[in-house]
Image (cartoon, rainbow, N blue to C red):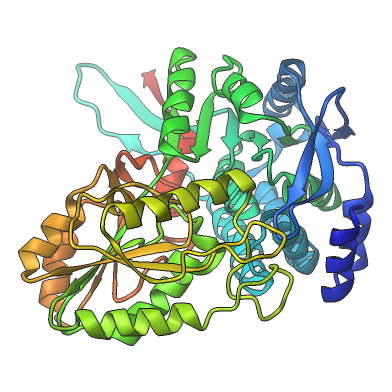
Length: 499
């Protein structure tokens, strides 16, 4: 292991399980077996910019084997014969295993991704266990319905909901464990089997999770984890005719390619894509509450959040108060490795991500936005950039319109309510939005007018297992979480009997 990483682990401390896992040779999980590959991909730890380990670079043949294993588990064997109540109990056992190993999973995720350890355990890991428990309960509740038909003769007719089949889950690097569970929990509850392809930068938590699948007793082939480059095996997996459903989270450009590949195979697809979510702050809002929300939305995970409220519209009467609270909040944040228990914001994922974010900051300055705070990269190892706050006067600036995917917030001023909603909707994305006001009538009226898949009122970026998440327009289609998600992983069969 690299000395810089050795030093970091020693300074902050990790569980023996974490250290042993990181020193182990990483293998994929296919058909209930841990397997290697001829080619490997180096994994870089973002807080030190040092090599952490390597993961297998799967071949197309590896993907085919994983799909075959998932198909066999779907059609025959213990999983195919399992009653809904048995499937529910097994998923609850898997959730218990996640909770029991939450510290280790959180440490692995933090080291691999860079995010702050405390919120990572609470939100990413324990939140995933909660979602698995929530969805497990639906295993016994996927009912069909009898129908009263009107054609001549005597007939009985009813519908049956069946698992859609083998599901390909392509997972992003910003929420590696949590987003994987967003895709797996409902599919497993419905009786599907999975081929999970984590991002090449952040595969480690899924490879550790494969061990928990063994511990919980999941039958071989129900969950398969293949690692590698999205440009090769990701596209191959999405377009494979052996896949019955594709669930993807990632950028809009990559989502288009995944959608095209799935379309050629006639596989239904769920796409949760990019965003540039507005926060609309009316004249009666609480500036302190707004600033606190941006801390978790825009700056936690270093702004690498598709629903981040990265363009903020504040009424002219409280604009200065909001700016003052935002500046105080950003200037007080501690930038540190994610393992630091006092870390407010860790590094971004990679050197290329850092370069892109700095490029947007430079463009913001060049286009006339006022840099209020941040914008610098600390003189230290790792991919760190300060939390950054801009003020802008035009809604068409690049930093207002494009997804930066970094800790950059732009605030703009508005005079009338209608102007605020018009500016908020003036964007290609439609993932999420928030409204800040004490006037419930205004909140309800404008929540209906905002063109976004989720609208929060007096908060931003809160999630719950019972509530669906998914966007409109260039932010994709389909839903993760909530009962609505189960529709994407079941197919309805109509059955007739003529008496």
